[in-house]
Length: 275
Image (cartoon, rainbow, N blue to C red; front, top):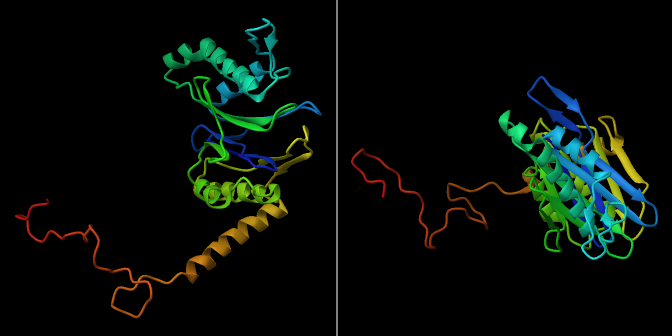
């Protein structure tokens, strides 16, 4: 399994992925889930992948040369000459479908689901930054201002901090920190996600980025973040008053009367009805 997250803000984009793959508890390997496509001054794009490793690797390979046809001119559109991120994502969708056409039936016959999820984001000169999530059928959705991030893989553990912290106005460095906390929460709760991590931070309209980091177990910043986040969570938890059950003095009682719903009724005899 894996966990990948991409955040789209007014200030730029943040991409983060783990690198663990597994086929059972005794077959754990490291494969990078992120690839950067950059033509400085013209386009900057990042692809993240989750799901079946053989499928995602095939998609990444085919994407280098895959094209769709421009309906007006008949010229081929690739990720290297697409005029928009929308068209570049259409090329990615075509690459997914090409892999399915080649391998889908054979995988099905072998009892293997055609399972791949992709995040594709970046900026092409002449338009703003855009972020897409691509599914196994090659279809896709675009991130909006209401949901300024995409997740694939083991997303549930790292989602709460994203929902509580991120807004479009969040600074890039703060968003990178939020993404790393999201990843740390996932690492803590799921053994199928693991280090090293790949982190890319892109500043809006730069059309290039040198903010690329590989984070391993001994990374000083990530170790500090891991220890601080766990300690601060415990401190906040301890600062919240425990529920009062025996009529003690409190400004925030748990046992209150009123409302449409009543406390559960106990069943005390076999003859009693449940409803």
